[in-house]
Each structure stands twice: as structure tokens, then as C-alpha cells.
Image (cartoon, rainbow, N blue to C red; front, side, top):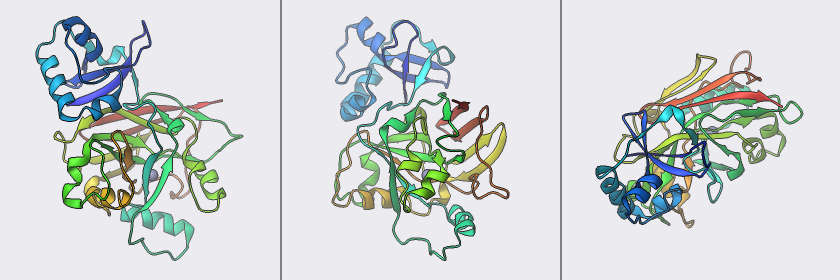
Length: 303
Ligand code: ZN
């Protein structure tokens, strides 16, 4: 199943939608009201659906099967991030594609080896924005805004000390994140990246969450285009630390909870490592696509 969070122009109330055939959306809130069915989750809150576990998915399946009334055309809706305001920071992974590590190392010249454990950092919840929202550009804040297409894992069942063999049982599904990065700020703060990764609107997410049974996360093409020109084009099969390893390491002594988002790292082709370096500027259209999940389309907007 593919879930998204959207609002209708008439009331701006967040609603969960079930996506059909790529372009039709069933409004779960409306259908629950119309059918008088009780749902074991809040039909406007993705985390509530995730927390309901299998009972939530079963209820959606029943509701969809008994649907009364039509679905809505996707293009008529304002789509929000699937989890518009995560409860905690987005977990991110640095250097998880070899070629991206190498392109960065050509710039850094640090003599660093690829780490033997994943490098984790985070983005604040306020950075999260919708799949079609603008990316703010203010030269007084940063002039070196860069792109990073990433497959993101959405945690389902809570877990601590998750074993690799059990990792997929803790995953609700997958979504697309662009780990937009202010490279000048990222370099300014003593080698830790929180600030440069967390500007408002610098974490477009969506357009939907695809449940884990629908895609093979180990073989998905990942792409970034800027103004239609392909900048990143790789595949999640090249992830250096695979998803089970990431979950095992991150959950070691630290509880992962339903609705937590883990962005798995970006492949080669980012702007700062290009010759000459390239950064986003007002008016640019950034498209972030993952096969089987969807495409984010975000325009850079001057202040
Ligand atoms: Zn990243």
C-alpha cells in the first residue's frame, strides 16, 4: 500500500490518503465518516496509522474494499510530507555510497578511510517539507545549497538492539528524502553537520510512504535532476552499509520508535564535488526520484 498525507483546499485538515494506480487517492478520513466505520488510528496522522501496526493496515484494506464514493485525482490535492512533523530528528547516514565518499574525499583531501561503522547525523523536524514545497534561498543564510537524493526508511514497530535478521520486521515502509545541505554552514560548525543540514525547507519528503511489502529496498534506482539535467543516478544496491546493518547499529542501546525516519545516504553526483562546483539558485527546479516510490519536485525560491 501507498499512503500519503494531504489537505483539501476547503478545510486544510490533514488527511491520510491511500494511493491507487499512481494518480487516484482515497480519503481515509472521509470514507471512515461516510461508512460509519471505526478505525484503530487517527485518519489524519501517519504516525498513528504506523503505531496501529497490522490492525491499522487491515482496517485500511477493509475500508478500501468497501469504499463508497469516488477517489480524488492526485493532481487536485496539496500533498504534505507523509510525516509532516516527525517527533524527533530525522536520522541520516553520511558516506553510504563508495563513490560519494570518494568524490568528497577528492575535495577534502583528508586522507580519511571509509569508516568501519556508519556515520550518523540528523536533521531537525522543522526542516521537513512537502514533496512540492519551495526550498527557501536567502543569500544572507547560505549560498551553497546542494542536493542529496536518499532512500528513507520509516520505522514501524519500536525496537532496541535490533538484530540484523529481524530488521525488516521493524520497518513500516519507505519514502524519498532530499537531504538538502547548506555546504558553507555544514563546514562552519566544527565538523558536525546539524546546522547545515537543518534549515527550514531543507528536508523535502514524500510523496508517499510505500509499505515494506511493495518494494525491494536493495534494488531501487535513485535520481536527482536539476532543471531537467540528471545530476545523480545510482541504485540502492550500492549502499555500503545495508539497511539491516543501519538499524542494528542505530538501535544499539537506543530505542527506535514508530514513525522514526532514517535516511540512508546519498550517491555520487552532489553539487559541491563537481568541477566546477554547482549549487542551487533561485528558480531552479530540483527533482528527486526513487523508482517504485515517487518523485519530489521542489523549486528554489528567493527570499
Ligand atoms: Zn545525506
